[in-house]
Length: 522
Image (cartoon, rainbow, N blue to C red):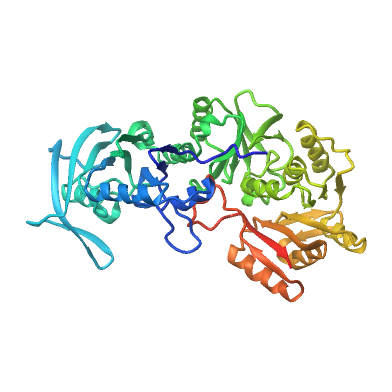
């Protein structure tokens, strides 16, 4: 298993160029929150240098040198205004002027940047009207200097405040419509030009009056800028997460799976939006009703669009999974565990692996493919265990091999039996449901957490690793840390950070729905 779903970037002239998404800081705003540079450093395992910054709400072209020497030279080019920058923005304001240059003095007063006329200006921007886009006006902005909020302040001062920029006189909108379109400069004798794709709001005028459709289009655009998902037609990733509260959209190969959270059924307008989405991206669509945020056992497929299949195969980082439309609330793979599955794959070789609450056994599968010494899979459902074996088979593994065990059993009972047999594992994955029923009773993460973790730790070897995950909405990551620290009276262990979530899910400053943590037993 190798990483196929990778962050996209362009490398040239000793620099990494990225197409930053809106909502992402250029670098970490505070401890524990990654910015754009940290995300790419982590993915590339390389040091990058943030000599160029964009506001959090601004999208587009951003450059990071890969050495301190190039960083020093590029910093000088920025300071000498030898980097040509081109921005695009939308406004709902009309102007008789079509092209002009504006200068002002930008200073910081209290916690805000302000612009004022001055005989000694320190900022200069050239504006040019390009065209009407739906009910709005598209402008080009060329900053000749690089002061904070310069384009936003200068647009406001000239009566063309940027759409969504309420801080600087703009009309409320679902986002700041400001985009860094291109960067050009000459570095070490090389002419460098980096240009990004046009944002949705600059091209799709018909979407600008349908905020929900625009929001979905921008959600997909975010995944395209970060991952180029259009080049990954067989892979699985989330296309719309929390951008719209009423549904989520996942890509499972050539099928899209919509988790529908509204109590009412999709309207004709909703279905037409999905149909248009299916045609544009050559996908088939299932819509699954998810009352009470996934707690309703009677959820059903509401609609399907295109020539859908009840069973199909898709890939995650090259590993094959069988997906089904008629078995539970998910088609068979929880995509928020992608980075955790990669972590398990990297640590499973030659280990004895225990996968609890295995579902369709994504963790077991990647452990086996990585060369685990043994893989023990436990789930209370015979159907999921059979499905797990099918996933092994389609990846060329024999589920009947002596290295692989599949148990249909309550996980806490299995752990207690394992303790009695004095059996130990050196890698345990525990991803329990928030709530579940079986013939042995009711499982609740809030009530059974201590019992589950204590028994799992008894089954873990010294220096062994335990990956624990939960989607329980009433807990934050901080709550999980507090609960784990209380167990230190019974066991000695170190808490390690779990892999960061992919940016097709939460952005770094959002509390994740799926919380993960790694324990190493001392």
